[in-house]
Image 1 (spheres, rainbow, N blue to C red):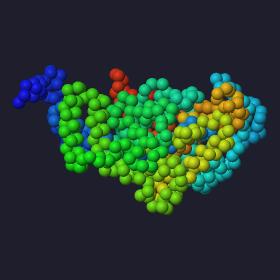
Image 2: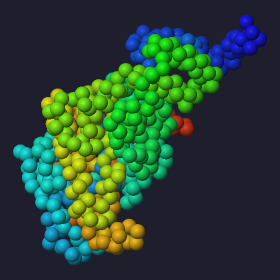
Image 3: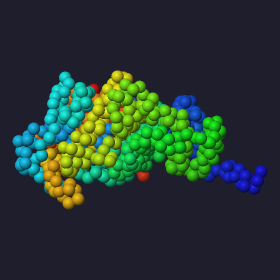
Length: 489
């Protein structure tokens, strides 16, 4: 034994008073947990031994929620930039009566707007429910009886950055865990060979970048994994997905050695969260080699299925989302409008028509595909952006709308989102905006209420799904939010 090895062995024998008490107090309890928790703690399940040699609970292991769960997974179709409610799912015929005239409302003054701008798109009733949907979403409208359209959403401010953070993380200003991370924290994931939370945004990040799928103060392993769906080659979608230099058993032996050293390092650093996340990431990266290359390869789907979704990048995203969902991935978020966002300050008729053309057929196909596979009933599909748009024309602003008078400004006072599957009532609308579509009027539903309801559908009381950080218990909904039971089936 070298002098260095001797020093290491002596260090292993040394216990501080705190460590001795921790081992005595936790050791027998941990032995009992091994029997209670079973496979979630055994080697090969993604767990690693702690400083006492006992396995540490895998934060990604599947868990049962405390309440009745209507949904098992979430697919969030995020329309980046803020789609217009009065041009999609909230028809306002009164705007035609006041076209070109000032709206007789006491409108907020922080963002001055012009005259009423009627929607250039026709609305029709669909399904047995008679749900009114714009011509922009004729394919999605075929699922009218599956949609729960919330027409009274409202947020806090008319700016992209804080509104994205509020919608994705429950707080407009502070660094907080994303909704997907909270869901993964509460439920774990059913597939240990894939990330439990995946965010797909083509060509790069949206505004606020990775903060949209951050883990915040939750364990780092619960953060979303970013995928660029612009790539069709699996080796580019997930870098280094294949090991071309060593055999699988050799790679496993190398990883086991690295993990043993890292775990020993972790035990001496009071379970450092970043290091613990890195250990889990190494293991997940190894396991992904077995399954990720297959799940992102949509060419394996039958031609009939690929034809259902249609061509284009977003169609491939939606098909990948279904493949991820059926393989046990817990939270999947798809960003649409990364290159050309739904932020139509001008030319709204052209811009919204193009964006809807890209997304209408794939979204409808996703709902059809989930439904015929028996997955829609326990998959919660969410559609919407960070806010909506004004029912009035945006006034010319240098650098904002090229001086045109054919677009809409941001509007957080009232906008529309819809939910489908996952235990929500279909074929209904909830709440409403005023007769012009500007402000939530009947049954206003804040983003916190939406989050509380989503967690309820997944089997959680949002006031009790908490994590202690900096001396207090935090939750996705902060100290707000009410479950909207009227939309729960």
